Every structure is written in structure tokens, then in C-alpha cells.
Amino acid sequence: MLVPVVDRNQNPLMPTHKWRAIKWIKSGKATSFYKKGVFCVRLNQDPSDTEKQEVVVGIDPGSKREAYTVKSNKHTLLNILSNTPDWVKKAVESRRNARRARRHRGCRRRPARFDNRTKCKLAPSTKSRWQLKLRVCSWLCKMFPITKFIVEDIKARTLKGAKKWNKSFSPLEVGKNWFYKELSRLGEVETRQGYETKELRDQLGLKKSKSKLSDKFECHNVDSWVLANAAVGGHSLPENKQIIRLFPLRFHRRQLHVFQFSKGGSRRPYGSTRSLGFKRGSLVRHAKRGLCYVGGQLRGFISLHCLETGKRLTQSAKVVDCEFRSFNSWRYVVSSQR
Image (cartoon, rainbow, N blue to C red; front, side, top):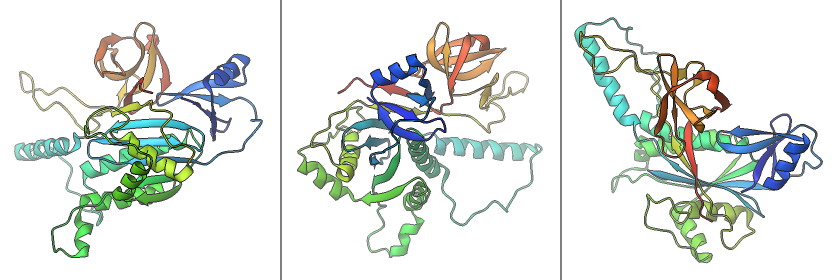
């Protein structure tokens, strides 16, 4: 996998080989840093060449897994397989029940506001899914000089015989249109139908696996690679099948306290995005635990979690033993498949 390169103003340049990046770091020509888990280098001097190749991103959306491929004519720069957030609907329902219970108990609460109602409001669960796609694309644009996004278009199934305007009531259609509008601010957007993706895949003799929840390249990334390759060309078969698995982290931002109260009727506070100065989810390097991410806090200590499994490594880490590396909103695993 090539190493992303940015200039002194954080503008992305064409990536370079790992051995060259190490040579730059040792000579002082570049400084290494992490961009949400991906190793990058920043040049400390003006680049000798600013010519950029065409770099595109192929996107294969899905209900539980989503694939992204960053590709140029010569190299497949990055393959990403991301999980979709599936906890928002239940969280909104739990919040609604807790709010109704507080009103029933006669607790102090703010008056109802009606000035925040919008006509084209996205459902929270739908909005979280499309916002994740937009965050991933924005993250990729900060590392690579991306000019175009090729997205496999998805459509909502309406009732048989329904009118055309019935599609505007589908959360899927509303969320998709919102995503296309926001994505067009990052670069050119091109859509392909599902049958077009299949035709491109058949022309190259590639097969897609039926195991939708597997972490193999042939499950979802084969479609995103085919879409990107159709735009820039250069390969008849994937030469880089290494995948970065993304798992979005869940943060409890607005929950005032735990739902289950302790003895005496007291409820301890719960929910925050800060832990003793660290933003939760941030990548840190611990003296003993290595590279991990920040969780909650308890009695002056912070929790550290494993990047690969999400399992809590310790609950009593000191702030002075943690070296901040990068802000992060997901954990990641780099596969060894090639």
C-alpha cells in the first residue's frame, strides 16, 4: 500500500512508496503523522513535482457493509470495507421513552420547540448512514487528490402501480439525494446502475461472493474496484486486495444519566465525548498497551480499547502515559489479503 503525501499546507499530493517515505523522514524532508489511522507524511519543503494523476473513488453502498476503492491508472491506492451504524433507531426509541417518563414524573424540562421543524428532514437512522459515507469521502479527500466519485445508484422499491412522486417519501431516496448534493462539493459525482456494475464485472471475468457479511475482497470491494477502474482504467485484474476494515464507534452525547437508577433512586451521570482532556475515540500510544483508542473515564483514569477487537484493555490508564496521535471516530483493522 502506498503512503499518502501532503504538502506544508495540508494539500494532498500523489502518494509514494513506503521506502521513499522512510527516507524522507530520516533526512528531515518530511514528518510522519496519522490521518485517522492511516500512516501519512507531510513534506517540510516545497515538492519537486506537483503533477497529479487522475484519482477516483468507487463506492458500493449497502445496508450492512459498504465498500470504497481509491484508484489511479497505475495503482489501487486503498480498499475500505466499512460497517454501517445500526444502533441509531433503538437509541432514538430509548431516548423517546425516557423523555416521556420524565414528563410523566413531572420533572423539569425545556418547553417544546417548533422552530426546528424542517420540511425535508432525514430520519436519524438514515442520516447516520449517509453521514458516515460523507465522512469517509471527506477523509479520503484529505489524503489523496481525488477528482471524481463513482457511486452505484440504489433505488427504493415503491408499491406496484404507485405514482412517481411516491419515491419522495422513501427515506432511502431522500438520504441518497442529500448525499449526492453534499458529495458534489468534494468533487465530480457519477452514478452507475447495478446492472452496469455487473456488466463491467463480467467483462473482466470477476465474480462476486454471495456471503454479504464476509470480509473478503470479492464480497463488496470487487464492485467498488470495478467502478473505479472503469473511470481511470489501467488494470484488467485487481493488483491490490488489501482491505482496511472500518467499524464506526458509538458515542453517547446527549444521554444525561443511566436509565437504571441505583439504590436510593439516584442516577449517576452517563454520556460524554471527552475523557480527561482527550476526545473519545482518539488514537493514543500508551507506554504499555501500544496504539489504541480512548474510551470512558473513571476516578481520574481513562479506559483504553483495542483497535482490532474493540475490547477494553485497561480501565486505569494515566493521562501522562498516553501520547496523542490523531482524532478518530472509528476503529480499524488492516487485513493481510493480497
